[in-house]
Image 1 (cartoon, one colour):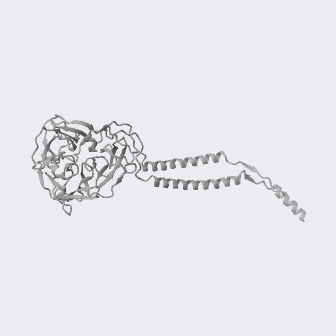
Image 2 (cartoon, rainbow, N blue to C red; image 1 turned 60 degrees about the vertical axis):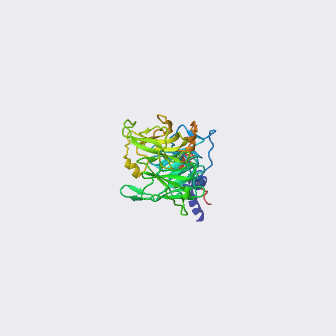
Length: 469
């Protein structure tokens, strides 16, 4: 019985088809396991790389980048529109600047608050994300170009950092040495029918980190731009309040830092001429008289400015040859005097669509840059000259400008070269890493699939085990 059973089982075993096991089955399983571990490790490595890169590249003030420098700093002969890849002032400080500029060419729909900055010693262009500030009015350079006052912030352009102490309002004018800043309190209230109320104007001392003078304004609004000036000796403040220029001595400030004006000069529709209004003798100021011209270069903008000098002792006009008139100019800002007969200024050039506002508009709302300004010119006004000498004009699309006054007064100009836009900003690097990861992952997956098809294991026949005996 047992031999027959053994023979029957042997016959059954011979009839069973041989098992087919893929060649390299265990090797393939081991390879798949290793690949999965490699993918997980790669994903973790990419995540760590992105996080580490983001931490390493967060905006910090970096040392000044190496680049071609000139023997002496100066105003550039050319301004360019900084592209989107331009580094920020905070990420890569440009150093002392020659100009801060803005306009439609600098701003975009995504970066609508940008301002451009160009260094004084080289063509290092950077961008300043300063909020809704107009260069030359709400954003201005110190005379040496080291500091930029933007809103209530005072930015050191050699480090890219804000100064520790906050200024109490929006800027009006720097002192000639750049150590003090005149500002107006930004806690304004609306005053019917069409003006705002500025509580006070102050003089901030950067070295002390505190105010040294405050002047109560009353029910008027002190607009940014060219409504204040400190005398060259630093002892007096000229402040335009409505249709008057208030003269205040810093030495008159009491324990509460407030002082009253010792004299008020009527303007009769004119304007204070800007941060450089004081003449070198510190006993006279320049004011702008406004009139209407009949043959203006821009027919729709008939405003003409005439520069005059007034004594601060008794307010009388001082005799002397006349300065050239400035017809069809939306604004005039004096930067400083080369002599008693020669002054450097910024003037706004209105476009063909600009519309002049009535005189009451200027007194009520202040000398903002008028809408429709298409360019800004840096000019020299000389007594007895028929026309101003134009030193520089902004290119198309750059309609706002603030200049380092020291360079403009000295006439320091350097030839522009190849622009340096600094290292790529963090957002551009992060976008590049993300894009590279999105492209690399599908490519690697495709390569793995192609390699798997090319090395697909072939099946082989495994002989049947021997039948039991």
